[in-house]
Image 1 (tube, rainbow, N blue to C red):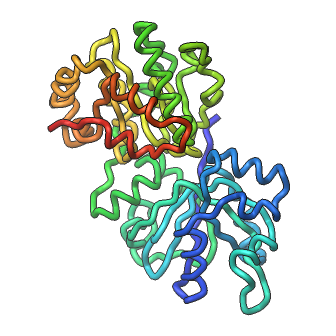
Image 2: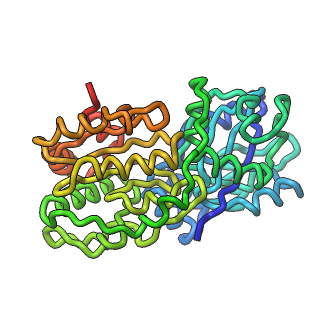
Length: 370
């Protein structure tokens, strides 16, 4: 079932106290271990499991009818926009929430009237941006001079229109920060829906091996890993895929369902972190075509996409990416898709051991068109 994501505004007013809170618990992330004394074992487990032990940003609201009503509607996977002085300064995904005065006092003490920011929400996939509210208003359908007040929810109809028409919010904000115009999704999602259950027949040897290495690297990177249901029963060197990947893919309107058909996908929360197509016995063209369909459904998304292929097929990958079909101004696959060789994937998996691995290192190890 598709999740309907909500978007919340929270106003960080710019006062010294609020600036300090922002620095302490959004700019600087906090660990679950640090506050475990204030949490039940179930709450602690949920927080740890959601992002595999990574630190969180934390924010909260003081008691009040409006704040409580807004907080109660908040769910994991929803978006939060932090507003200050006419600008969106940060955005994130909700991971969980707790009402906990002890945690609030531990992080932020009390306000001047003795209240705590006890309606707490934990945030992941945090990005800091500098986006004028007016530039976002035109895509939300608000007037140019609209600005949020306090802690509030954006009208759901406006949210749905934005996410269905333009894709994931975090990527949209990063494009707006650069002054780029957002690309409206032009392809009907139903056109590619029929391919979601497509099973790609590949050589069972190197394709399976590469898929396992990507699962392994993803696990070490502390991200969730998805492979298509038809592949979850595979194993490589006695490693059964289904023991190391997501059993279900949580869908949302800003993440095209077609991504469920990509060979390997890395996620954190509901956000996509990377997509990999492995080309072994099929033509390079077919793999890039699948990424092309994905890109057409999410033209504003900025997560990296990779074609994984043997070293002797490198030039073919680049030749195909240069084709006008893929390198046009709408898809720009020649700029977004990188090449990873089999030997590089093996090397990345072997060199990481069991330490946490920065997903950006995978991008830096890949090759782009010269």
